[in-house]
Length: 220
Ligand SMILES: Nc1nc2c(ncn2[C@@H]2O[C@H](COP(=O)(O)OP(=O)(O)OP(=O)(O)O)[C@@H](O)[C@H]2O)c(=O)[nH]1
Ligand SMILES: [Mg+2]
Image (cartoon, rainbow, N blue to C red; front, side, top):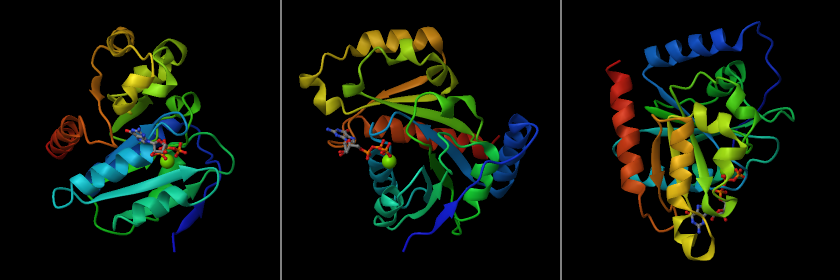
């Protein structure tokens, strides 16, 4: 049985200030929070599932799944033996800091790293600071290499970009080098990880980045 929390829009005069407070609270509690954003179906839950499995024994990972309806993603994470909570966003297409704080209350175990799987959408989630320590996004090959041109804010806001479903490269005209150039023009500091969560190709590099950033956060 998955716990489901129904969240309402939070009323704060400043989401940015609230997000800063949440980040400090989580740092004090020793929790590293990452906000994972992407279009629907790009592979967020699949990436998280494989990462959790690969990092068993290295980090205690929990996931907060945000959706408009259903508990299917939280069930997928739960089936791996990892802690998960499903939150519903009252029809809203993003999570803000207050909603994130309320949702986190549903995660009970001792966790090192928590992922917020944000609502599938390349626009609204980029506009709200959730209080996460790092923002990251997924772009999957079938979505096309023009997405940095169409949704620049999302690419500007993220610390890491996962380019996933690389195993499907033979079937799509996705230009990886052009994508990297477009993304770096928007955000020179971003870390980019081409991978396939299906075959495991490239997973090591992404997981090393995750563990390194967690270590940096612990020492911050
Ligand atoms: N070939 C291939 N398929 C993938 C890969 N990653 C995910 N998929 C498939 O893509 C589909 C969507 O994956 P999900 O992980 O559910 O995507 P999501 O972003 O969590 O979807 P929403 O939560 O609905 O937004 C599924 O059929 C996955 O099996 C990959 O690396 N390669
Ligand atoms: Mg999902």
